[in-house]
Length: 309
View 1 (cartoon, rainbow, N blue to C red):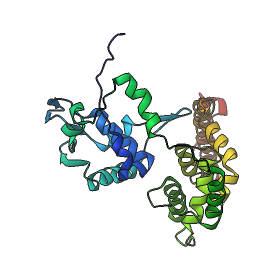
View 2: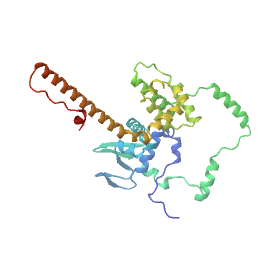
View 3: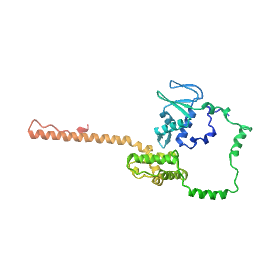
View 4: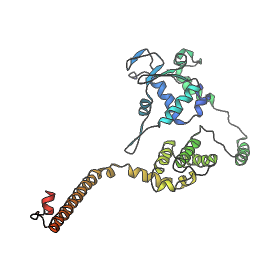
Protein backbone atom coordinates (compact mmCIF):
# COMPACT_ATOMS: atom_id res chain seq x y z
CA UNK A 1 0.00 0.00 0.00
CA UNK A 2 1.38 3.47 -0.89
CA UNK A 3 1.89 5.95 1.93
CA UNK A 4 -0.83 8.54 2.54
CA UNK A 5 0.17 12.02 1.46
CA UNK A 6 -0.17 15.12 3.61
CA UNK A 7 0.75 13.64 6.98
CA UNK A 8 -1.60 13.34 9.95
CA UNK A 9 -2.52 14.83 13.30
CA UNK A 10 -3.53 13.16 16.55
CA UNK A 11 -6.75 13.68 18.47
CA UNK A 12 -6.93 12.17 21.94
CA UNK A 13 -10.01 10.18 22.94
CA UNK A 14 -9.92 11.95 26.29
CA UNK A 15 -11.50 14.93 24.50
CA UNK A 16 -14.83 13.14 24.99
CA UNK A 17 -14.54 14.05 28.68
CA UNK A 18 -13.87 17.73 27.97
CA UNK A 19 -16.32 20.61 27.77
CA UNK A 20 -15.85 20.94 24.01
CA UNK A 21 -17.45 17.53 23.43
CA UNK A 22 -20.83 19.12 24.32
CA UNK A 23 -20.18 22.39 22.50
CA UNK A 24 -22.19 23.38 19.37
CA UNK A 25 -21.06 21.79 16.08
CA UNK A 26 -19.49 24.98 14.70
CA UNK A 27 -17.16 25.21 17.71
CA UNK A 28 -16.06 21.58 17.36
CA UNK A 29 -15.54 22.02 13.62
CA UNK A 30 -13.48 25.19 14.05
CA UNK A 31 -11.34 23.37 16.65
CA UNK A 32 -10.71 20.54 14.17
CA UNK A 33 -9.85 23.11 11.49
CA UNK A 34 -7.24 24.72 13.78
CA UNK A 35 -5.67 21.34 14.63
CA UNK A 36 -5.62 20.30 10.99
CA UNK A 37 -3.97 23.52 9.77
CA UNK A 38 -1.49 24.11 12.61
CA UNK A 39 2.15 23.89 11.52
CA UNK A 40 3.93 20.63 12.34
CA UNK A 41 7.23 22.52 11.97
CA UNK A 42 8.33 26.17 11.98
CA UNK A 43 7.44 27.96 8.76
CA UNK A 44 6.76 31.37 7.19
CA UNK A 45 3.16 32.31 6.30
CA UNK A 46 2.20 35.66 4.78
CA UNK A 47 5.55 37.15 5.82
CA UNK A 48 5.11 36.04 9.45
CA UNK A 49 7.17 33.40 11.25
CA UNK A 50 4.73 30.72 12.37
CA UNK A 51 6.12 28.11 14.76
CA UNK A 52 5.15 24.48 15.27
CA UNK A 53 1.64 24.29 16.74
CA UNK A 54 0.68 27.72 15.38
CA UNK A 55 -1.23 29.02 12.36
CA UNK A 56 -1.85 32.48 10.94
CA UNK A 57 -5.38 33.13 9.65
CA UNK A 58 -8.03 35.82 9.49
CA UNK A 59 -11.53 34.96 10.71
CA UNK A 60 -12.66 35.21 7.09
CA UNK A 61 -10.07 32.57 6.13
CA UNK A 62 -11.53 30.22 8.74
CA UNK A 63 -15.10 30.77 7.52
CA UNK A 64 -14.06 30.21 3.90
CA UNK A 65 -12.13 27.08 4.85
CA UNK A 66 -15.26 25.61 6.47
CA UNK A 67 -17.76 26.64 3.80
CA UNK A 68 -20.29 24.20 2.37
CA UNK A 69 -22.74 24.13 -0.54
CA UNK A 70 -26.52 24.32 -0.19
CA UNK A 71 -27.82 23.78 -3.68
CA UNK A 72 -26.11 26.45 -5.77
CA UNK A 73 -25.29 28.69 -2.83
CA UNK A 74 -22.05 28.83 -0.89
CA UNK A 75 -22.79 28.81 2.84
CA UNK A 76 -20.42 29.88 5.62
CA UNK A 77 -20.57 30.32 9.35
CA UNK A 78 -21.33 33.86 10.45
CA UNK A 79 -18.75 36.22 11.88
CA UNK A 80 -20.52 35.87 15.23
CA UNK A 81 -20.15 32.07 15.08
CA UNK A 82 -16.40 32.40 14.52
CA UNK A 83 -15.89 34.98 17.28
CA UNK A 84 -17.86 32.94 19.81
CA UNK A 85 -15.98 29.76 18.89
CA UNK A 86 -12.59 31.44 19.32
CA UNK A 87 -13.69 32.93 22.64
CA UNK A 88 -14.86 29.49 23.81
CA UNK A 89 -11.50 27.89 22.88
CA UNK A 90 -9.55 30.66 24.61
CA UNK A 91 -11.58 30.36 27.81
CA UNK A 92 -11.16 26.58 27.71
CA UNK A 93 -7.38 27.19 27.52
CA UNK A 94 -7.12 25.27 24.27
CA UNK A 95 -5.72 28.15 22.20
CA UNK A 96 -4.07 31.56 22.57
CA UNK A 97 -4.50 34.33 20.00
CA UNK A 98 -2.57 37.45 19.08
CA UNK A 99 -3.81 40.01 16.58
CA UNK A 100 -1.31 40.83 13.83
CA UNK A 101 -1.45 42.87 10.63
CA UNK A 102 -3.64 40.93 8.21
CA UNK A 103 -4.93 38.30 10.61
CA UNK A 104 -4.54 36.46 13.90
CA UNK A 105 -1.63 34.33 15.14
CA UNK A 106 -3.27 31.30 16.74
CA UNK A 107 -1.34 29.01 19.09
CA UNK A 108 -2.61 25.52 19.95
CA UNK A 109 -1.77 25.12 23.64
CA UNK A 110 0.05 21.91 24.66
CA UNK A 111 0.39 21.03 20.98
CA UNK A 112 3.67 19.12 21.42
CA UNK A 113 2.26 17.04 24.26
CA UNK A 114 -0.89 15.93 22.42
CA UNK A 115 0.83 15.44 19.05
CA UNK A 116 3.56 13.17 20.41
CA UNK A 117 2.54 9.48 20.05
CA UNK A 118 4.91 8.56 22.91
CA UNK A 119 2.63 10.36 25.38
CA UNK A 120 -0.27 7.98 24.78
CA UNK A 121 -0.91 4.83 26.82
CA UNK A 122 -0.27 1.51 25.11
CA UNK A 123 -1.39 -2.05 25.75
CA UNK A 124 0.55 -5.31 25.53
CA UNK A 125 -1.38 -6.34 22.43
CA UNK A 126 -0.28 -5.49 18.90
CA UNK A 127 -1.81 -2.60 17.00
CA UNK A 128 -4.29 -4.74 15.07
CA UNK A 129 -5.41 -6.67 18.14
CA UNK A 130 -5.83 -3.48 20.08
CA UNK A 131 -7.94 -1.89 17.36
CA UNK A 132 -10.30 -4.86 17.34
CA UNK A 133 -10.39 -5.78 21.02
CA UNK A 134 -10.30 -2.40 22.77
CA UNK A 135 -13.80 -1.35 21.63
CA UNK A 136 -15.10 -4.64 22.99
CA UNK A 137 -13.48 -4.02 26.37
CA UNK A 138 -15.09 -0.56 26.45
CA UNK A 139 -18.60 -1.99 26.05
CA UNK A 140 -20.69 -2.60 29.22
CA UNK A 141 -21.58 -6.16 30.18
CA UNK A 142 -25.11 -7.30 29.30
CA UNK A 143 -27.62 -6.77 32.07
CA UNK A 144 -30.08 -9.59 32.78
CA UNK A 145 -32.46 -7.08 34.37
CA UNK A 146 -32.43 -4.83 31.34
CA UNK A 147 -36.19 -4.96 30.74
CA UNK A 148 -36.97 -4.08 34.35
CA UNK A 149 -34.57 -1.14 34.27
CA UNK A 150 -36.00 0.12 30.99
CA UNK A 151 -39.48 0.30 32.51
CA UNK A 152 -38.14 2.33 35.43
CA UNK A 153 -36.17 4.61 33.13
CA UNK A 154 -39.23 5.27 30.96
CA UNK A 155 -41.18 6.40 34.01
CA UNK A 156 -38.33 8.69 35.07
CA UNK A 157 -38.12 10.24 31.60
CA UNK A 158 -41.86 10.98 31.55
CA UNK A 159 -41.66 12.65 34.96
CA UNK A 160 -38.59 14.73 34.11
CA UNK A 161 -38.76 17.68 31.71
CA UNK A 162 -35.59 17.98 29.66
CA UNK A 163 -33.70 21.25 29.85
CA UNK A 164 -31.11 22.51 27.36
CA UNK A 165 -27.91 24.39 28.03
CA UNK A 166 -27.27 27.68 26.22
CA UNK A 167 -24.54 25.98 24.17
CA UNK A 168 -26.76 23.11 22.97
CA UNK A 169 -27.84 22.91 19.33
CA UNK A 170 -31.61 23.16 20.05
CA UNK A 171 -31.16 26.23 22.26
CA UNK A 172 -28.83 27.99 19.79
CA UNK A 173 -31.26 27.44 16.91
CA UNK A 174 -34.20 28.62 19.02
CA UNK A 175 -32.23 31.68 20.06
CA UNK A 176 -31.38 32.44 16.43
CA UNK A 177 -35.05 32.43 15.41
CA UNK A 178 -36.05 34.55 18.43
CA UNK A 179 -33.35 37.19 17.78
CA UNK A 180 -34.21 37.47 14.08
CA UNK A 181 -37.87 38.06 14.96
CA UNK A 182 -36.88 40.53 17.67
CA UNK A 183 -34.70 42.38 15.17
CA UNK A 184 -37.81 43.17 13.11
CA UNK A 185 -40.17 43.69 16.06
CA UNK A 186 -38.67 44.97 19.30
CA UNK A 187 -42.06 44.55 20.99
CA UNK A 188 -42.21 40.82 20.25
CA UNK A 189 -43.10 39.19 23.55
CA UNK A 190 -40.50 37.19 25.46
CA UNK A 191 -40.61 33.48 24.65
CA UNK A 192 -39.87 30.32 26.61
CA UNK A 193 -36.72 29.24 24.77
CA UNK A 194 -36.64 25.94 26.66
CA UNK A 195 -40.02 25.03 25.18
CA UNK A 196 -38.81 26.18 21.77
CA UNK A 197 -35.67 24.06 22.22
CA UNK A 198 -37.71 20.93 22.91
CA UNK A 199 -39.41 21.38 19.53
CA UNK A 200 -36.05 21.83 17.78
CA UNK A 201 -34.76 18.76 19.60
CA UNK A 202 -37.59 16.72 18.06
CA UNK A 203 -36.70 18.07 14.63
CA UNK A 204 -33.09 16.98 15.11
CA UNK A 205 -33.70 13.57 16.68
CA UNK A 206 -37.03 12.40 15.26
CA UNK A 207 -37.39 14.30 11.97
CA UNK A 208 -33.67 13.77 11.25
CA UNK A 209 -33.08 17.37 10.25
CA UNK A 210 -29.49 18.58 10.46
CA UNK A 211 -28.28 21.62 12.37
CA UNK A 212 -27.21 23.23 9.10
CA UNK A 213 -30.56 22.65 7.37
CA UNK A 214 -32.57 24.14 10.23
CA UNK A 215 -30.23 27.11 10.55
CA UNK A 216 -30.44 27.87 6.81
CA UNK A 217 -34.25 27.65 6.79
CA UNK A 218 -34.53 29.93 9.84
CA UNK A 219 -32.38 32.61 8.21
CA UNK A 220 -34.17 32.27 4.86
CA UNK A 221 -37.74 32.40 6.21
CA UNK A 222 -36.98 35.48 8.32
CA UNK A 223 -35.82 37.31 5.20
CA UNK A 224 -38.79 36.23 3.09
CA UNK A 225 -41.52 38.90 2.99
CA UNK A 226 -44.33 36.37 3.33
CA UNK A 227 -42.90 33.75 5.69
CA UNK A 228 -41.24 36.13 8.16
CA UNK A 229 -44.68 37.03 9.54
CA UNK A 230 -45.92 33.44 9.60
CA UNK A 231 -42.98 31.65 11.25
CA UNK A 232 -43.02 33.16 14.74
CA UNK A 233 -42.30 30.02 16.76
CA UNK A 234 -40.37 26.76 16.48
CA UNK A 235 -43.68 24.86 16.48
CA UNK A 236 -44.71 26.67 13.28
CA UNK A 237 -41.23 26.14 11.90
CA UNK A 238 -41.50 22.38 12.50
CA UNK A 239 -44.96 22.21 10.92
CA UNK A 240 -43.99 24.11 7.76
CA UNK A 241 -40.38 22.91 7.48
CA UNK A 242 -40.77 20.74 4.36
CA UNK A 243 -42.51 23.53 2.46
CA UNK A 244 -39.99 26.12 3.62
CA UNK A 245 -37.03 23.92 2.71
CA UNK A 246 -38.31 23.20 -0.80
CA UNK A 247 -39.15 26.87 -1.38
CA UNK A 248 -35.66 27.88 -0.25
CA UNK A 249 -34.05 25.33 -2.58
CA UNK A 250 -36.23 26.42 -5.49
CA UNK A 251 -35.10 30.03 -5.11
CA UNK A 252 -31.45 28.96 -5.13
CA UNK A 253 -31.67 27.06 -8.46
CA UNK A 254 -29.84 28.53 -11.48
CA UNK A 255 -33.02 28.54 -13.61
CA UNK A 256 -34.40 31.51 -11.70
CA UNK A 257 -31.12 33.37 -11.99
CA UNK A 258 -30.97 32.67 -15.75
CA UNK A 259 -33.89 35.03 -16.46
CA UNK A 260 -32.23 37.96 -14.73
CA UNK A 261 -30.41 39.37 -17.82
CA UNK A 262 -33.64 39.23 -19.88
CA UNK A 263 -35.59 41.03 -17.17
CA UNK A 264 -32.86 43.64 -16.91
CA UNK A 265 -32.89 44.16 -20.66
CA UNK A 266 -36.65 44.58 -20.61
CA UNK A 267 -36.33 47.14 -17.83
CA UNK A 268 -33.80 49.11 -19.88
CA UNK A 269 -36.07 49.01 -22.92
CA UNK A 270 -39.03 50.19 -20.86
CA UNK A 271 -37.01 53.08 -19.43
CA UNK A 272 -35.87 54.10 -22.93
CA UNK A 273 -39.47 54.11 -24.18
CA UNK A 274 -40.66 56.15 -21.21
CA UNK A 275 -37.92 58.71 -21.79
CA UNK A 276 -38.86 58.96 -25.47
CA UNK A 277 -42.53 59.45 -24.58
CA UNK A 278 -41.65 62.15 -22.05
CA UNK A 279 -39.49 63.97 -24.62
CA UNK A 280 -42.29 63.76 -27.19
CA UNK A 281 -44.80 65.28 -24.76
CA UNK A 282 -42.36 68.07 -23.87
CA UNK A 283 -41.87 68.96 -27.51
CA UNK A 284 -45.64 69.03 -28.07
CA UNK A 285 -46.09 71.40 -25.11
CA UNK A 286 -43.32 73.69 -26.37
CA UNK A 287 -44.91 73.79 -29.83
CA UNK A 288 -48.28 74.65 -28.33
CA UNK A 289 -46.74 77.53 -26.35
CA UNK A 290 -45.07 78.92 -29.44
CA UNK A 291 -48.31 78.61 -31.38
CA UNK A 292 -50.24 80.48 -28.69
CA UNK A 293 -47.74 83.32 -28.74
CA UNK A 294 -47.75 83.34 -32.54
CA UNK A 295 -44.00 83.34 -32.54
CA UNK A 296 -41.90 81.97 -35.41
CA UNK A 297 -42.44 78.94 -37.59
CA UNK A 298 -43.81 75.70 -36.35
CA UNK A 299 -41.20 73.28 -35.16
CA UNK A 300 -41.58 69.96 -37.01
CA UNK A 301 -42.49 67.16 -34.66
CA UNK A 302 -40.53 63.94 -34.57
CA UNK A 303 -42.29 60.61 -34.92
CA UNK A 304 -41.92 57.79 -32.40
CA UNK A 305 -39.77 55.87 -34.87
CA UNK A 306 -37.44 58.86 -35.30
CA UNK A 307 -37.09 59.22 -31.51
CA UNK A 308 -36.34 55.52 -31.06
CA UNK A 309 -33.73 55.70 -33.79
